[in-house]
Length: 117
Image (tube, rainbow, N blue to C red; front, side, top):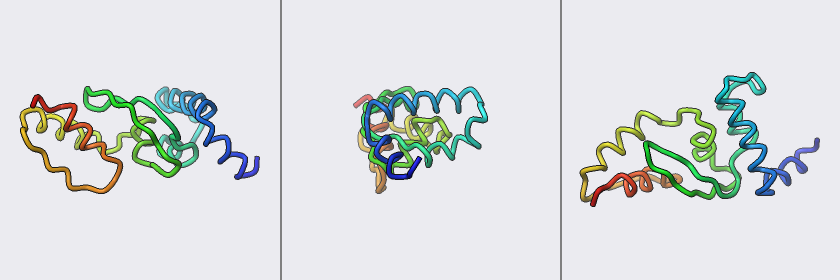
């Protein structure tokens, strides 16, 4: 299938959602449908609206075509999982949190959801 056709399919929210869920299930079951989970995030990135769970918090997020962080989190490929758990634990009792970063804002969302303040 030509690359342009694949890109057009990925950009259709309903098609993208169905394929992502099949791929995520395959990755989580340890299937060898694809070489490794990390490759899934590059071959079929998350595009459109999706719900994610991080360190006990749930978020509704929107991913663009090149958002590899969101794709890694969606497919469960252990993107900074230890750091995310530690961040959530530290944010629970914090009144002020500084997130000095420039990516998708996952740490900011997680701090806001984890904070009791």
